[in-house]
Image (cartoon, rainbow, N blue to C red):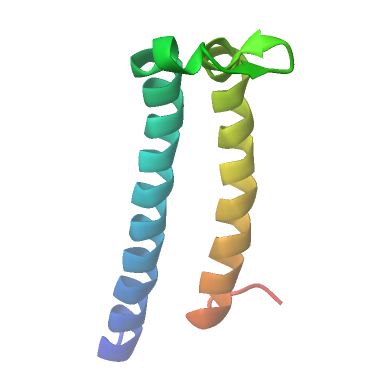
Length: 88
């Protein structure tokens, strides 16, 4: 592999890892933080008739994870085009 292709591959994986770390941090904050750590404070707020902390523990973390999957796919398609590794 040539030097320029190695540098391009490194830049691609650097972007990919940065995105994954950001999304995993958000997922951790939503699932662990909102569903476990701050559940008592969030339970004072009602959401669709349920305490917000309960909702995050049961549904919110799943919905946010699915939304992050779609965001990851969209962003990776942008990175693929940016680093010229996209599919035709």
